[in-house]
Structures are given as C-alpha cells and as structure tokens.
Length: 424
Image (cartoon, rainbow, N blue to C red; front, side, top):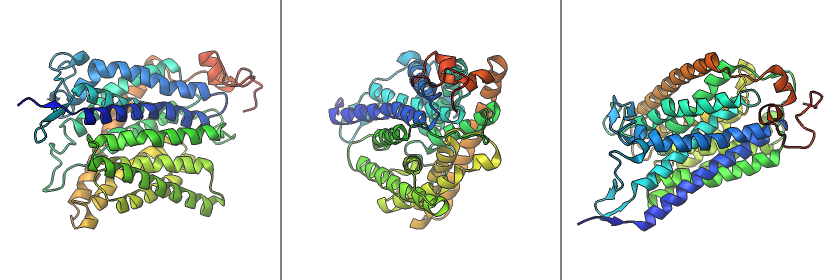
C-alpha cells in the first residue's frame, strides 16, 4: 500500500523551517545592536547576505553534499542531487508503521535554514573591519567546505553519526539539533577568523559599547522564538518528542539567564540587559544538542552551567588578546561544547548520572574534538587563502570613518559614521 501524505507533520516542519529562517534576521538585530552606531548596517548586512548566498548554494549542491551518497563518510556526492535533480527522491521520509510520509522538499527547506544561521553566526566575531566582498566569498566557501561536510558527518550517516565508527555498545553520538554541526563549527570558525584577520583599531584601548541595547533584547527574543523551530522541529514530529524539546529549550534558557545574571551580580555588582540577552543565547546554544535526550530537570542543569561558563568565557578575549567582537567564541563555542559534552552526564538513556557509565561521555568528547579539528583545518585554509587573494581588511581610514559609509555608502543614523570627527 502506498504511503499517504502526513499533512500535519508536513505543516509542522514548514512552520519550523519558517521559525528557523526568522532567526537570522533576529541575529541581525542582536548583532546590530551590539556594535557601534557606525557599523550597524554592515553588521546586519552580513547576516542578510548569508541568507542570500547559502539559500542559493544549498539548493544547488548543499543538500546533496549533506545527504547524498557518502564519500569517505565526510561529505555527500555534490553531483548526485545537484539542483535537487538527479537522484533526488521526493518521497524519502516514510513512517512505515503509520503508512505516511512527508515530502523531502520540506526537509530541504528546513535544513537550508540551519546552514544559513550557522554561517551568519560567524560574522559577529569579525565586526567593524572586513571587506563585504570577502565575507560573501567566505560564506560560500565555508558553507561548502565546512558546514555541508559536518552536517553529513553528523546527520547524513557519516563519521560522527550513529552509523559511524564512534559507537561503543549502547553509546552512540548524540547531536539532536546542532551542537557540533552549528555551534562548535561556527564558534571555532569565529576564533580562527578573529586570529587571521586581527583586532579592530582601538581594541582594548577605547570603548566599543553596544549602541542600541533594545535592539539586542529584541534580537534575543526573536532568536528564542525561532529556536523552537530549531529544536522542536528537529524532532520531525509534532508529538511527544517535539513537546519535550520545546519544554527543554524553554527551561534551559531560563536557567541560563539566571546563571549569567548571578555571575554579573557577584562579579560586577549589577545584572545587565546585555547579560540577560547573552544568557538567552548561551542557554539556547547549550540545549540544542541535548533537547530531545535530557529530562526537563536535566535541562535546568545544562542551561544554568552554560550561563555561568559563558559569562566568564566572554572575558577571555581581553586576557588572551584576540578580538572576538561580539562574543561568538565565548557563547557559541563554549556553550556548544558544554551542551555536547553534557549529554555524557544527562542523557536519560546512557548518561553517567543515569547509570550509563562513562561511554557516552567519551563518545561526546570525541565527536566534539573531531568537530573542532575539522573546523580549524578548513577555516584556516579558507581564511588565509582569502587573505592572500582578496584581503580581509578595509583600510584604517575607512574603519575610523565607519564601515557603513565606507562599504555601503549609507549610515543608520543622521550624522553618524560619515566623517572622521565622529565620536567613537
């Protein structure tokens, strides 16, 4: 008997894809508010350009590289379903027990939004100082050589999946919605680019405060809203699994806010709106790989620890001397690592705290390490190649005057960013 369309699941997945797509404009607001007034348009354009670039190449070869026939367990054959043609199967998601399916094209849309937000995340580490043209080329190259292979390795049956070599007894790699694929991958790339490109002019010597904290709060709110599609949508159902992911996403995020604000109150004497917004993102990042595999009580621990760790980690750039402009490393890499490894403790089926021994912890640590190494290698190659061929930096004078006016010929606010005499 031929399976019939499950319109309910199809509708849920299309809504989830739309929610995840909304995250990137939300990120544009979040990042845009964190930079200075003379850089806000460029910062937002970096997110919107990621949508444009990745939205095109995902259809051409991104889906095929992510979910096509495996080449060495590292990436799928880019030509197998190029342009969503060739061997593209429009009915590949079948629930044999229920006798239903939802279209593969729906999943293409859902997965494309993940690739888009991952590339956009990196931009926060290199604010104020890079050529827009170089960023455009980087977006295409990094998505192709880093994101698509990583998604294949984790979700497409590759080396880091539950069909790969890192399975020990009942302990198999767990990455529910993108701890390795999205957050470790983007966080490592952000660190590499910050080192390759170098610091902003005046970093550590002059104030570089967020110019619009309400933008930051609004952006964080939109990210939180969209993240329900990110995590609950990754259940591929609108049933119990999606409900658990939704509750865990909420609970972990709330706990992370409290953890971050507690650190600020004890360390700095005041809980800040920027800290609350950053705590939101840290909690969302940490629960992403674990949303479907921990209990709601476990999600409190995952989120609270993420808030505390990231609140301390964002200060490392000043101690270690690298300019991660908007704390991509301190939040996405640190919270992404914690969320991935936390499953070794809190996974309900195999975690250490549930009697599962240390095998799951070891598996999670290994896949996190492999993800780090892979992303470092690929991003170093791309970063230095573009530095040699196109150059990364705008001129010092353009950076002084403001990247918005220098690169885009416009400013966000009247009289800001178009003259050397602007108060920075």
